[in-house]
Image (cartoon, rainbow, N blue to C red; front, side, top):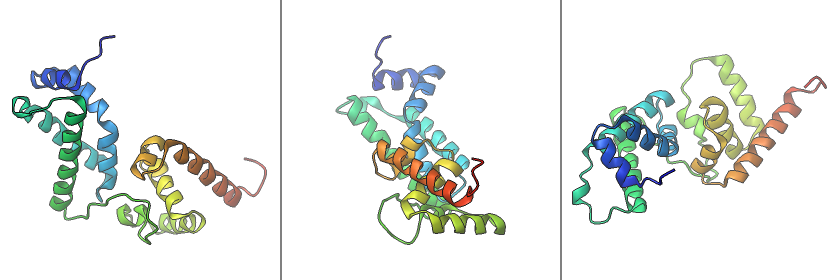
Length: 185
């Protein structure tokens, strides 16, 4: 298989090559997921908006004005553009843009992003929050509620992939110990 550079894919996408655009979206999907999860709006809506922004960015990118078109420089430029677009989207929706961090603040990712009126779900979630640490709960929320792969959730929380899987195992163990006191699971 021929190794295609990022600039080649961008040029092909700008010439209306749908396959090249799909490859670019696939390559930057983890970044789009990360920023969609940081927006305090519905995850699917946020991701769709960011994909549209990404497509417009690629189509409007003036490659001839760039001094350096190496893969790293282009990827960094796209990342910064998506970051700024996320902030613009959050302002347009009048919601806060949530920078994900691993600090021990009392505002967990769930508290900042969760918008439900289901009181039973809230009671259940409050109980789970009492069982898990903030970091564990953030991984739990990203993986089980937003359906984000553990690798991406770990990257978003600035922990290693391996730590993410360890946290997932710890979460499952804690929840099984709490909710499955009988031996049927």
